[in-house]
Image (cartoon, rainbow, N blue to C red; front, side):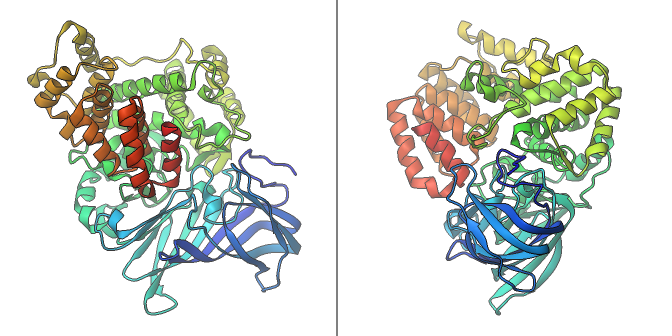
Length: 589
């Protein structure tokens, strides 16, 4: 069998899916989605067809006329899940799979009412990236396949279902207690972008192309925080070309959502930790919006080429921020990203294959090696090319790249061929192979001038000589400057200094999560009691992996705080997404 994707059983020479239609009921009591999927092939197929599954209960498979189709389900592989092999009758164009998801499905998180903002209704959401769509529906779970999507999802009233798709309204369900929500996705998407949520979800319009959805308890805050989305959309279109997805709606998730955002087309999922009350974390929205071009339109062929999604998107995000807020703002974000990249490179260690952009991941769970490397090292490579050829020429290249590969999935090697055709010689000029296939950061990395950063760096460097920020200086800092200052301090400081900083600037009570977590990590390592208590409380309130990992790591550095962290994790484990649970377990081993 010819597997093209190291994370999929699919042999695309056997046949290729072109549409998935879901007919499912949300069963909160059983924590399952139950029903059937109709899978349509691009061309009629006879004989064996292999699909990816993970912990699905397959009740039966049949032709669209109802004739049974023989199938086998293999024993599960720890990374790939189970191979589902169908033996299709001659010239099969579509078939139905009756199935149910597992209550422990890695693609789904089921929340009790107590875990929601309202505390009355349960909540469900999906997260299919990187290779979890197979836990939601049997399919060829590889970005090399792009599919159309239709769905009819039934849920108990008064709950609403939303999907990353065009909404086609609501109709009565199978009984008077249920309603059915209808959707279709006009554009073909890779399977990891299938996304749905169900709960007490309400909409509020924030722009001509955008609605914010959220639980009513946070809807007003979310609508205000994301109220500048149309300006951001228009700015992005000016740089990258027309927005191809019609809608850019936003769903403010429950606190357990494991990521800052997920770029599901037409309905971006966003963490509530962005609701700082000052629109200071709109860079996350800019990042997910940028994916509308780099990732959703032009997609990595598989996870070995993940940098094509994320490196280009960080570059696009920062171009949007630069256009909206100016070069200094972009430079501050680049500096924060570079510091994060340095930490990740150190964590993996010198020579690690996971610090390369073009990776080899056969037998490796992509969740286990997820890091900032494809984001920030990829950004530096894209920025280097832009600086080398000049922005005007690079912008022409970028638009040509998006136009050439829209609604396609490509490899690093295909990207290299395209760059060589459009920008001859630039890859050799910059030593791109060292960036792509080397494990270090080459010495020709771009730098970003920022007087604001220089002043913050100087003040942080003067810590050892006793210099401290005045309230007048710090009150003028942006959240980015605060983060850079805290990053620039020694790894631990005296408890008395922690108390002085906390008393002067109220850091433990900080409402901006980026500043708060940077401070808590420093203060926890330094043994500052109030910060330890706040860190444990914060970890019990949210499940964003960007914050879970450093905070649990800081707590795990001391035997006393590690014990408290372990006890907390056992208490709140169920409130974390399955992907996040695995991350915390790896830290607390």
